[in-house]
Image (cartoon, rainbow over all chains, first blue to last red; front, side, top):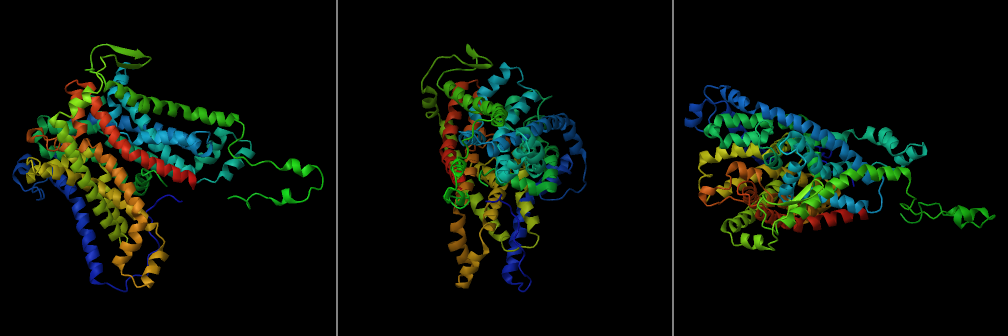
Amino acid sequence: MSAPTLARPAPAVDGERVSGLRILLYALLVFFAILFLVPLYVGLTTSFKGTAEVANSNIWAPPTAPTLENYQLAWDVLHTSFLNSIYLSIPAVLISAILGSLNGYVLSKWQFRGSNLIFALILFGMFIPYQAILIPLVQFLQTVNIYGSIPGLILVHVIYGIPITTLIFRNYYIDVPTELIESGTIDGAGFFGIYRYIVFPISVPAFVVVLIWQFTAVWNEFLFAVSITSDPTVQPITVALAGLGSSTAGTNFGMQMAGSLLTALPTLLVYIFLSRYFIRGLLAGSVKG
Amino acid sequence: MSSNIVTPQAATQPAAGAEPAARVIPARPGRRPVSRDRLTAILMILPSILAVALFVYGFIAWNGWASLTNWRGLGTMNQVGPIRFPAADFSSFDNYARLFQTDRFLTDLKNNGIFTVVFLLGCVGLGMGLAILLDQKVKAEGFFRNVYLLPMALSFVVTGTIWRWVFLQLGWVTNPQLALPALILAAIWQESGFTMAMFLAALRGIPDDLREAARVDGASEVAIYRRVVLPLINPVILSALIILGHLSLKIFDLVYVMTSGSPALGYVTDMPSLYLFELAFGDNLFARAAAVAMIMLVFVAIIIIPYLWTNLRSEVAR
């Protein structure tokens, strides 16, 4: 049927009863909201505390003398990898989106014999534990000499991103009326003409979903990043952040919290401003429309 | 679908001449000759097909082969094009047999089992509770929804770092009884927004008439949820279980950052994925690591293949 949304049905004529149950309902909602925000609160308050205060004060207490010292320290260590993550995610996400769009277009509007089977085989790649391909992948990247490099990691994210991006675009295009495509054929447009003038212009929502989803996925990814990049100068930020916990900075929790929040910032901003599209990507991951 | 879309009148009318008979073209969709456009389409998707064939299926086969050898990362490799694979001695299922005699691996399987069961129950229970709460025509619903989903936008490395700090303070991470519960709580916190979103979308898909009808029949709100709503969203619960279940079988980042498997506490939070990582990149026991990977793959395949199969089949049928 239609794509899943969380859109609310028209609000009922409300307000006639402010019963005890209603109050309990809101109390529960607020209670859980606080529960979900607790770790962020602790991270945020700790990140503004000085070293002595982190060691001595209660973790729930707000900072008495807020300082930016932790952010300074964390940024000194993390800024290279923060940039690496940007160099990594932007090309990876753009290439993924273009590939996904083309694949989705072919698998929905130019189906051929066996195309459904191929779609299923591609989709399976989304669910495999990447551990099952990790060792040969490392060997392969070493053989072709892109192991330990950002281009190598871009390639990996593009390839293992094919299933989810193909899925999102295919499910989006499948709802595009076939008559629209046929009208293009009648006008003499071919494969690329139909894509360029009919399909691509109506793809914006799907592109937004895929760009956001892939950006979040690539930025947050850890297993490939830690297995493929050992040199600190090319490490993405998740690897550098994990390293903070096990290095000499291992006991500087204020700095670790500041580092965590710096790492979280880009995806957090994307989420705050574009959560609608993020949720669509999330629900698309459950395969069926 | 079958009859009245096509215009049968022309065909059934008595033929006024010889002509109409020739016009009856059998409608056989998808049987057109391979046009140039169709060929272009196949050519455009071919690189992706080849990439997945090599990087998913080829590498799984490679890994499966390696798990049957005693390869330790060094020594002779066979090379076919850019693909090198171990030429080490074939050792049959030795690696698997060894794994199932290794205490750490058995502990990992147990940990992973406990983690999966509690994590699934927690996510489905909490997600369902939140979805039902949000389904009561709540004001500021969007705000609450976004708060519950917020952890999903964050990396496990970020949330793991913060949770480690919280649970260090509470003394859970260093306590053999509480380290695994701490890990499970952090995972439920992170992923229950996902089940909430899935269930809420499913609840919104149920026509209001159904609930209204039950209400008219005098059913209480609780009874409506139990008798009408839950049975209807059962398939969605199953989907959520499968998706989260396959995630928990391969959980890595969160554990790596939060506890590293708690080696000092007798590996009370260790998982197969961590053991694999250490075997491969710490001990150079690549063949053994490959065997762990194959076992993980089998677990995931058992729940994912039937899921994909039924999902795609119903898709084609609709």
